[in-house]
Picture 1 (cartoon, one colour):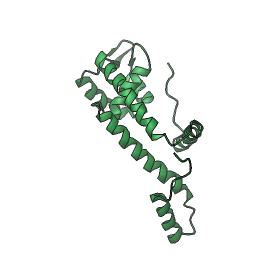
Picture 2 (cartoon, helix red, strand yellow):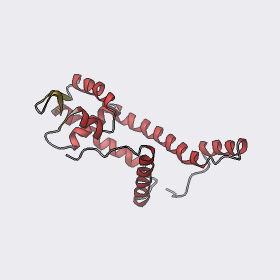
Picture 3 (cartoon, helix red, strand yellow):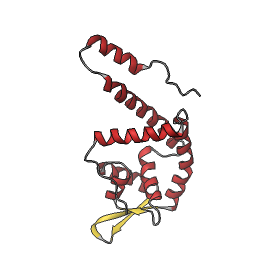
Length: 176
């Protein structure tokens, strides 16, 4: 596979239109943000199909994968899940209800917080995420096949900087 850039794309056409209509404006950020947005939509579409083939959706996979990768006993509070699974706390309850109804997680009172709960991965939930993970990683490999390991590392670092600039108040997830 050639490492050179592909030919002109939809974003190039949009940039040319803006240069023609508003030559006084610097529209160069659109080259990055436009492609980033289009790439994100395409990536989400591919991953959604992968998850659907395993009877999951992206949000459900994120919750199950977060519980699994945090190690035994595969248990977190909803707030920890929200922070660590890269989802909003508002989205957690709906996802947990769906996963609990399928027997993929359980919720129990948190002995350290009488008002809170602990979310645990069930054996069925663990099996579901472990069965999906290889396909998920294969899809990601396919999506990045055109990049060398060095290009992937550079892209990851650049995207981290863009992500931080977009949300500078973002906190690192809990480490314990």
